Length: 191
Image (cartoon, rainbow, N blue to C red; front, side, top):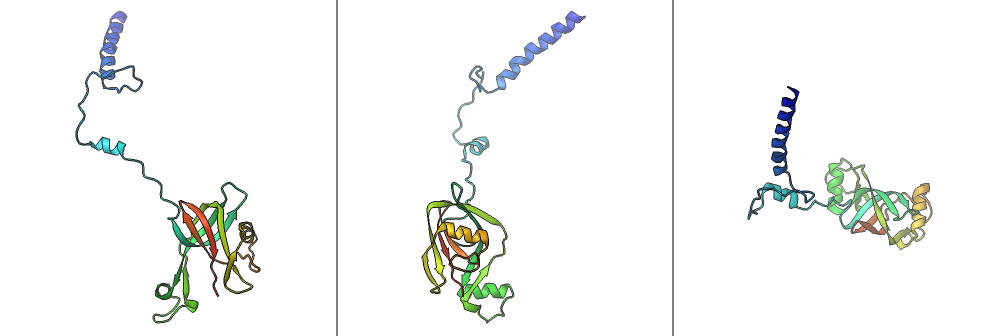
């Protein structure tokens, strides 16, 4: 009886092994399929799904100039990194419309000093800084002129929360982004 079960088991395995290996793909080159399909002229759903490239992740910010509130600048890292809160610096009719929508002014009124900042998204972003990032700051002594600044000094102002002096942490900045890297920081003067 035991010999009969063993014989039946071996027979079943002998029948199953070839059936399984026919459908397997030749991943290691040791097994070749017994039946091949001719290539189709139009791609199948499987072909299109596997042959299309994986989409690139969306950049933190598109190339261009963006108004931000800097939170930190790390200069002791490679690459240097800026962490910021993206906002919108609006002027003219656009500023007035946004301020009316936010209930800050009445329809027909104008925002003070012809600007209004919209910052309704608390998400913080970070980007690397170019090694040769240009820094322009407001010369508060001459009121409103931009002068070349030092990145380390701007970073220190944000680290300490400086509100007076040449380097201040209370200003918004324009950042210029190229290829996912910040190439320029420009402090925005506001009265």
